[in-house]
Image 1 (cartoon, rainbow, N blue to C red):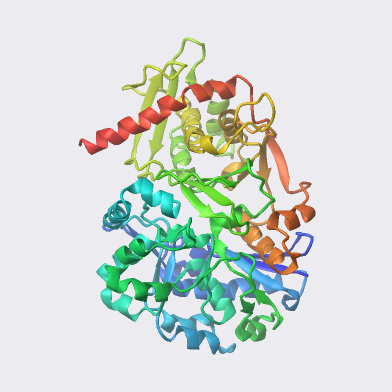
Image 2: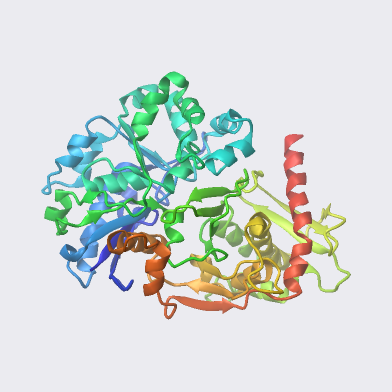
Length: 564
């Protein structure tokens, strides 16, 4: 039986069969299909003066109808054979419903479009986007609420972040009290999409709820102190709790049958089940049976490092979420704003290649430059940070810094005169990988006798996964005892993870875990390709010796900003 997942982060849909094979997929281009109507660029509006970044919810309603229309034309199986639906959505974003939402969702007319019927159910027509950075005041309050940033991370899995839903709710309540008063329910984008397909308000997902800075991971409930902060005081806690609604603790729960609207308008089977939708990052770790000690590196516009781990070791510099399917496991996540766009900036400082490959000279510079820019054992090691946007990991201002140190990490000093652009190409990739290694080192152990602690396998996804030079540097710095692999699941990994989640929810046996069921059916052939050897004895240790210097470089730059 086929299973469907929809993904709002890239607005795509994919259908897989019980053997995990893709049998249909479709895509909507937000800018291409709706840019003129909604005035968006890259799917969002940006208000530079305030740092606000937001998307029109009405556009998502239109795109859902459109992507399902396209899917029906591009699938080898009828829509009526789809047994269950799940999906992935951009994390942290929120949708504010008014009191008419429940009735309108339940009474959708298949002769009318979703946007014509549900636009009026929005208390707020916009959804804050993950790129938003308008909430510094609220972040400071959240970091201080429980006794400091590290305490907040201990409780919620993360320090305060601009994009997290709790800080956004706090800001919107302060800035738009009338809108907040009209709000009957607040959904995450994932539970919002599930609600539309279900025809009633759906609960939040056990993993996605961790991206709010409101959920106590240890107690698996909302934290009263943080609810009071977001709600403007203890008198508002009960109201906010009601607006947020329930959280579904079982990632494989069956929430109910698909709305009659989708049966009559798009041809779904009336018995098709809706399962909890999750965030795009939690869904990504479901795109394959990811073992503890395996890691995924997503090399897109941003760069994301993901691991499935039974260890809960929170820190204000990174994120822990409940695993979307496996109780007692967690998703460890690092998310960098300065990912692919920063690499492109460095690439564009090099001469333009004569060939059609825009990365040719960048890759050549990486391959021809020695690790850490040290051609001989006596040469200093080169370290750098290349932040074209203010970074979150760590919270350092935009800028470029170049440092040197000895091969053992001693004698760290700023390199005032810079170095050639070819060296920058290798250094930026090394820098991004060193940051991931620094922050994940407490979660890895030796994968086999005689090897230093490191990931077992590293899977690359996203546009940068196609670049062999980047894959090489990631293997050199992060290791990977079994190698570095490009994950090719046919569609985008987020949507595939959502489809696998729907399959598991409906076909699992009693007590059967996600990894057990998917592991039986998932085959490596045609889905992964080994692109680098990974661990290199000697070189891996060489990078390890400068980790301390890399961390001191970050601290020094942070200290400079505080004193300015």
